Picture 1 (cartoon, helix red, strand yellow):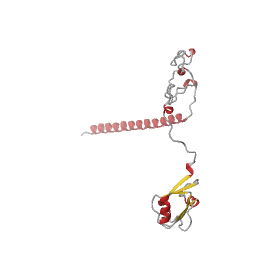
Picture 2: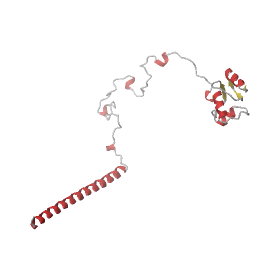
Picture 3: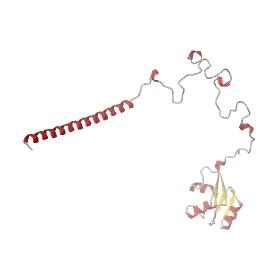
Picture 4: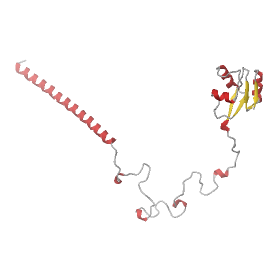
Length: 201
C-alpha cells in the first residue's frame, strides 16, 4: 500500500469518528433538553389553576344541557318533564320504596316479633371453659371469690357489663366461689361437682 492510500484511509477513519462524536453529542443534548422541558412542565402543572367562567365544565356523568328550564332556556318550556303530574314538579324524590301509590311491600307484609326495651349491650356471658383458661394461665386466683368486678379488672368481660351470666360450656376442674347475676342449672351442677359454689345475686 502506497503512502497516499494510507493517508486517505486515515482521513476517512478520522472523519467517521468525528461524525459519530457529533451524533452522540446531539443525542445527549436532546435528552437534556427533554428532561429540562419535563421538569418545567411538572412545575407548571403544580401551580394552582385559575378558575374562570369560560373554563367551567360539567361534572362527569352530568348532561351539559340544562333541560326543562323554561322558555328562555332555548331548550323548550317543558323539555323532558312532560305536562303536570308529580314527575313534572320539583321536590318529588326518587325513593326506592315508592310503588306509584299502591300499598308498598313493607306495609303488605305482617309484623313479627318485637323490639326489646332492655339494653342487651350491658349483659355479658362467661362459660366454664373461660374460667378454666384463666385459672390455667394463673391470671385468676382460685382462693378469692370470682365477681363481676374481678373479671372486669382482668379484661375477661366488657367494662360496661352490669349483668353477668354463667353458662355450662366446657369443663371446670378448679373449685371456685362464683358470684353472678344468673347461672344455668348445668353450670351450677358443674361448679359444685368441682368443689366450688355459685351464688346468684
